[in-house]
Image (cartoon, rainbow, N blue to C red; front, side, top):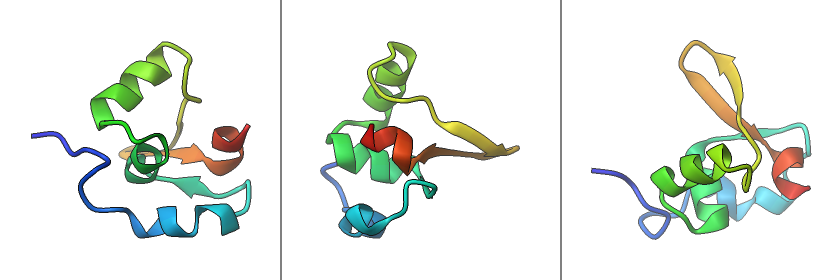
Amino acid sequence: MSKHASSALHPALKYFDELPNSAYVSIEVVSGLYDKSYATIWRQVRDGLIPAPHKLGKRTTRWNVGDLRS
């Protein structure tokens, strides 16, 4: 079962405007920003419509706030 943006609003989304451009956010935040499901987020990343995330560790992928804003 996939999660969708309409479920619970991620707490970081509430403060997104206050985050520095150097911050990184999870797919939950990106899903909330774009009001898209996780699958749609990944599809739009593949198609170049949403900035690609950064691999921060073996099992950690996050989006840069500055990339999302631009």
